[in-house]
Amino acid sequence: MREHSRQEVARGAGVEPEYVDRLVELGILRPGPGGVFPRGDVLRARWVHGLEEAGVPLDGMAAAVRDGALSFTFLDAAAFDRFTEVSSTTFLELSTRTDIPLDLLKVVREAIGFAQPQPEDHVREYELAVVPAIGLQLSKGFRRAVIERWLRVCADSLHRIAETETDLWHTEVELPFLETGMSESEMLEAQADLGSQMAPLMEQALLAIWHGQQEHAWSKNHVENVESALEKAGLFSRLHRPPAMCFLDITGYTRLTEERGDEAAADLAGRLAILVRRCSQEHGGQAVKWLGDGVMFYFPDPGSSVLAALDMVKGIVTATLPRAHVGIHAGPVVFQEGDYFGRTVNIAARIADYARPGEVLVSQEVVDAAEGTPVTFTEIGPVELKGVSGALRLHRANAT
Image 1 (spheres, rainbow, N blue to C red):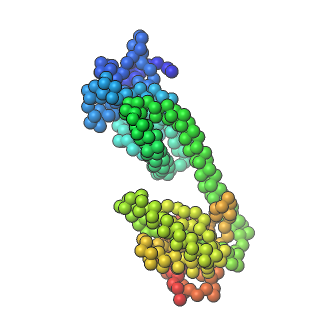
Image 2: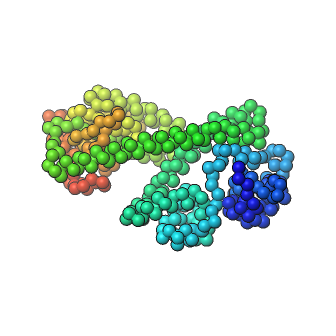
Image 3: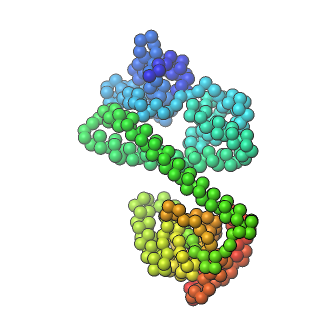
């Protein structure tokens, strides 16, 4: 393990050298022979400073360490090696050196959840690792707004993963250790050893899942590109009676779960699953996947998809569940590994987004293919949908 000087600890932790001296006086940091510090002291200084900034008294922490009630030695575990130090480069210097706009560089830290940095603040090492990707995107003409959106989505998604992982660790590791009679200090030491074993495996799993998601998204995009190329070449023939994709979304699902909690959300999801699965099966369809606040269905027959959707919307009201809205489109689809891809799927999802609570909206293609189905359709006019080229003729379906 590389050792650090007093100055290196201060720089890496983002504190003044005098603060390092204060931590040594209090016994929180203990330099070795020659006044050098282990690598873990960089993180110790940073975390202790953060605790003090949050209102935890420094003298109180020092007293707890002396009494053995608190320990920061767990930060020496290999699991914590991933937390990088503060670099010697400021945001302003980095912007000048790379020609990346300062405001865009600030987004890297802000998106993660920290306060927006000042130009003279030092960049953290992990933030530097993001810069080459941003630089390449800018050099290839990527719009700044698109890059910022990518940064924020990455940060937000990974924040949810980290929060869930931390909660799992607390309930499945830390609390069981404490229930055996361990002190807080002993628990922190014990969990650090397990964390060093678990962290690389969790990272490996996360990367594998991400790669799987990339293949899924890239494959979907490729299918849509091929369909578009064939259509432009006049080789994309319409099916006389194509299958239909149906999206059902629950109105206000996110707000409901926030207000009533996870248990209510689980109960709602369970009741919804039973109802919509039964309706889809009765009409020859199948639920393909669950999407948090909704479900995607596949129906070989478009007319049956409309009947199923009307039954679902009615059944959801009867079951006193939050109202649903449905979008259906008919056309060619690509089936791969249990999922469906293509423009038909994308358009159906956009129609569902446009539908109001209680509505079943369908495309002209569904109306044409559902001839003879005991349903009435009311055209609501050409509609421009986000992500769909050209206006679509949409119809509201009602049971006869």
